[in-house]
Picture 1 (cartoon, rainbow, N blue to C red):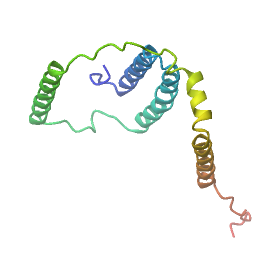
Picture 2: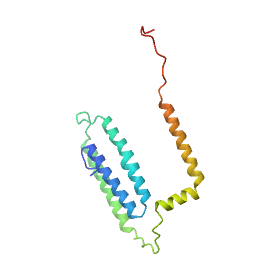
Picture 3: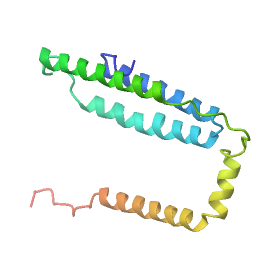
Picture 4: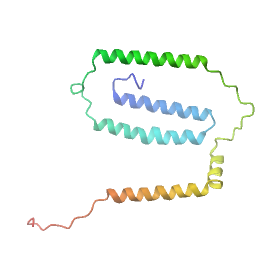
Length: 155
């Protein structure tokens, strides 16, 4: 529906639904932290950027150039060939065997926190200082300088 929708705002909303479905797959794979981060980052921040970009663009039908019929036919042929290649690859692929011993605590937040704060403490703290300095730099770059007040006469 994201691709087939005519309205770009509807496409973004369908894409949000797709992101929630992907987060559901992460939950099925026992990666709760990854599912939550996926929802926060993609369905939250990235979709706000997409929507603000769509609002800034002027998407009028009158100003949009229409594609020639030859380009549309070429796109349909290319998509059909891509579909044939994907079907052929999936037919040749062997099914993966089910894992015998599956550890259900691999993707939990407790284990992720333990690994981050035990084995990777220095890189984790270094990246936090790096992000903090980048944030301070961004604030300083966007800060407006206060110009001295000009007298009322304009001189």
